[in-house]
Length: 505
Image 1 (cartoon, rainbow, N blue to C red):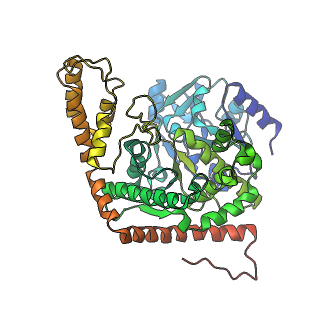
Image 2: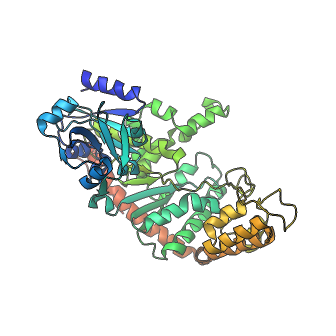
Image 3: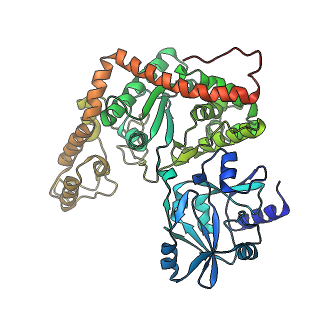
């Protein structure tokens, strides 16, 4: 229940610009109980501690599942004594019961552990045991009189293997370029080295825009080859930690979408970016197909089936995860269950947004400003040679600029660092020309992608092997999806004393 105290606290947060979502729940007195009810881990919370540092009280907001290093706090504050406030002190300082502390405590110095910002959203106290606020961690820095300090080390819970899920849609021709690699594929490969990863080709999603049989077939086949070649080129042919499959080979995605349709409000879908983008392009609402309008629900089904901890997305795609979480919370609340785990978006700060060879727009096949990975060497060489350098450089011995020079931008990712530094110095001195640096970029690209290009040739010549990889991945994916769907059927009442249906592999 949202009482007057919670409403007042919400207003105080709004006044300092801290956005928050109000989540009601039964009377729960521990962080563990709240997070379990929300089907989230303790690491998704931000408990607040009230401490006494010498003669002043301070608030310490830390990431759930981390251990406090009091020595770091004492050193930062230059105090000799540090202890937790006792029960009476806690109530007097905060005005709320022990265990219901809030992140905003006017008049107190607030220490923010830097590990808070490892996650985009966290759940925190409201002063009530029946209500929790979900915060955007970036807003924590708006807390008056606050400092960000590294005061905690992640617990073993955060260090264990997590489950990651990602999908890629064959809406384009399926040919990947270096922008795709740096912007998405490389991050997934890096994650897959230490975590359990599910990666699927979202061919059902492609139907919203691709409605030509041969085109969809070709797009999907090309994308499968490209993705597999890159994964196998860097991770090995046995694809350790990776389950690779095609969405349409696991029909439970569509079944779960049908069920989630019934707990998803129309207004939530109307706020989806893809739908709003179509309207801004002056497409009549009556002409927008239901698949596009409904795609966030299929995306939610894609994610929730596998109960992942994290879903890698770009900063412009985090709305997808927010909608998925909303749908999952509505389902869990409607059917009084904890079937669905609430996934977190994984948004790496260092994800590269790569400009195209024209140096002006994002790299895109449509714009023709890309460098391919798997096309012929002659084609790649032409693409490299067309890359924007320094238009102010008239002669090869004129001093050149490396800022905004796309050849050097790409070399920072693909070249050998010592050689790249050397070429930059020579270029700025006018002792090396565009031809030489482009030749080095071409050679660096071929070297980087040699294992993947070799795998690509092998896979293209052996469709039976590709099919076997997809079959194996789909079998594992169905195994996981079946567990979830059995729980869903039980929760909503489809399973009863006359039921005989059973999922099969």
